Length: 445
Ligand SMILES: Cc1cc2nc3c(=O)[nH]c(=O)nc-3n(C[C@H](O)[C@H](O)[C@H](O)COP(=O)(O)OP(=O)(O)OC[C@H]3O[C@@H](n4cnc5c(N)ncnc54)[C@H](O)[C@@H]3O)c2cc1C
Image 1 (tube, rainbow, N blue to C red):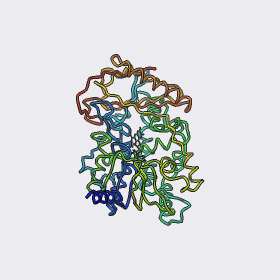
Image 2: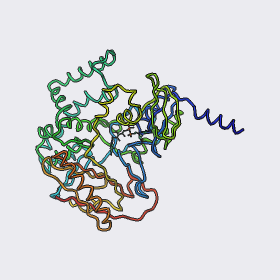
Image 3: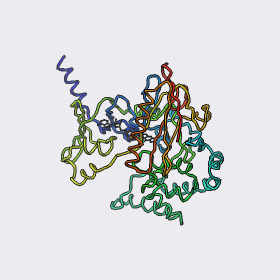
Image 4: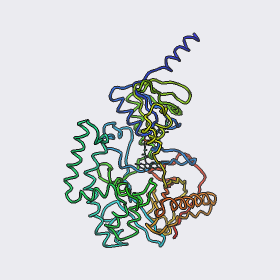
């Protein structure tokens, strides 16, 4: 009997899958769905205790659930939402309204969105010329988006490939770009140039340029004057919410509801997954993948292994180096993931009281974004009466970040502070009662 049980255990242990996915981030989970739809027997192995990767909702502070990392959506492809029937698993997008709020040290503030007229009125507080230019700027971006956006759904094209499909896609891209006429040259600048040049060309108000520039440097180790940041800015106007182009949204229930819906869809398609199961090696024999070995020492066989971990982790930690061509391994090792952005999640007992907009008015949307001027800095100071410790820690982090940013980026500092409050029906969801913590926010020069 004992022998039989051991044999059964062994058989289960040796269960062979068609495909193994290392990591249950939302991209790994989506891949698992499409593989399962193609009739493959799929296993997903996740290192952490929760699925979702960077699209996760977690109770960081007892009683408060946070979208710890990713928090807004626009680029998630509508085709995937439709094909995986994610709405039937509770996936729901809540368009941001307003889309941003930027308080300034002199007591002024700028709201962007939800509609063009409101945005124009707000911009006119700083420059009537910019208010007039803004719709034309948006139109220009929308025109350029029509060229680039279709590439989001395609396998990246390799001009050196002899694959005819790759060539056809490149030709289509070229034709779309040609249709832009004179704006073609603008597209070239947009793909390679700095955001500051683009914004300086269109606008005169520093307040507007600063607000728009945050999207150009978020997550990047760059200042708005670095080459390539115009594309990051452009990237943020792609995408859509419920068919409305360029609109960003929250996910009801927090970002974890997105990965949760995909995971539910995957389960219904027969995908299996395990959490707290880090993979330590992707097994390669005779030049082809054979499966994985987990950190617990278990070997699981599969003819397809897909890594949802980033390329650096995959090729420097999971694939043995002697299985990789030397020049490829060296190029992967030199990939630079440095970033000057950080995110701070805070649990608050009430909405922030901004010096620029006292009395909590207009700050219902759970997002506060601050970014320095192109040339001079705005200091973000958190003032807390009851929570001095939190205040000290936060000031410390901000100061370190400021030094870090100024040292490495010279001209740019970007800090994004996202907060949730107990009663918010959007990204923060109250779960259990907790002691109130009062934290006031002030923005000063
Ligand atoms: C702070 C922050 C904020 C962001 N905000 C936004 C936003 O608001 N909107 C937006 O669109 N994008 C945002 N992004 C980017 C976006 O979240 C990511 O691009 C996206 O979530 C990546 O998804 P992924 O599935 O490819 O990878 P990941 O989410 O990184 O998932 C990889 C998974 O693999 C697992 N893994 C790694 N190694 C192993 C191993 N050896 N064994 C098993 N499992 C392993 C990890 O634990 C993880 O779960 C943000 C990113 C960050 C970091």
